[in-house]
Image 1 (cartoon, rainbow, N blue to C red):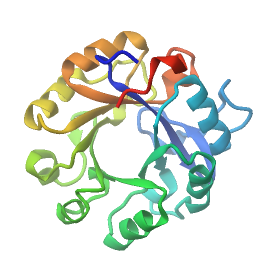
Image 2: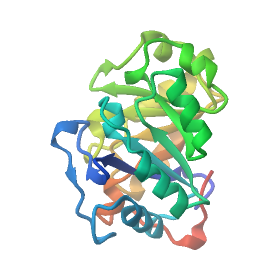
Image 3: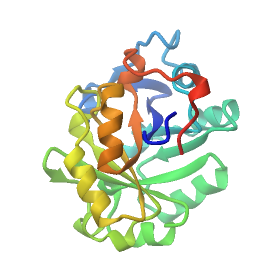
Image 4: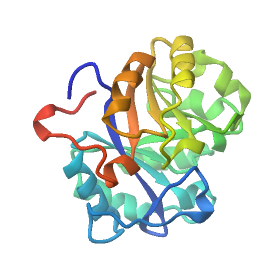
Length: 235
């Protein structure tokens, strides 16, 4: 892709072994996805469809069962790892305990995403800062999780996601003001937007706001965003 555009990172949301369609962060109403990119909501099939539409070295996976303190989707994650060995998986599994992160890293599946909504303080991020990705989670004007994680860029790792849950699956556009604000406070970090991408027209403004990457699902499934494999992979 052109060097001045953020890298596109496809997203899947897992629940009970299937991919569901995310909308505005209201997880209680998520339903198994129906997409022209795959014949079913099977995670391997959906991932193959996403990567055929938008080739990428990375895939973001939200394990909703784990985030909601139910049974983690270990089997589905292992299937994805085995089916796509060249893809780096960024996985949010509601990590809140040291042993859970340690087990995940030992599995070789990918990099753990530490979402602020799941954190009790800065200790877990401090311990795994070299391996982890931090997700600064908000819903509307509400910052989720410990204020210290939102307010202290010195704690942040190299990759930071600006997760605007209210815009997930919608057509409101990315939260450019928030991306600019986060980037200004941590100029050395790679900032990745999440939520609200409408199509290619948003990529330029995202780059100007300082986004190195953008997490996307709906715009790919709906055919609003496609990539020629020859265009490259961004980051």
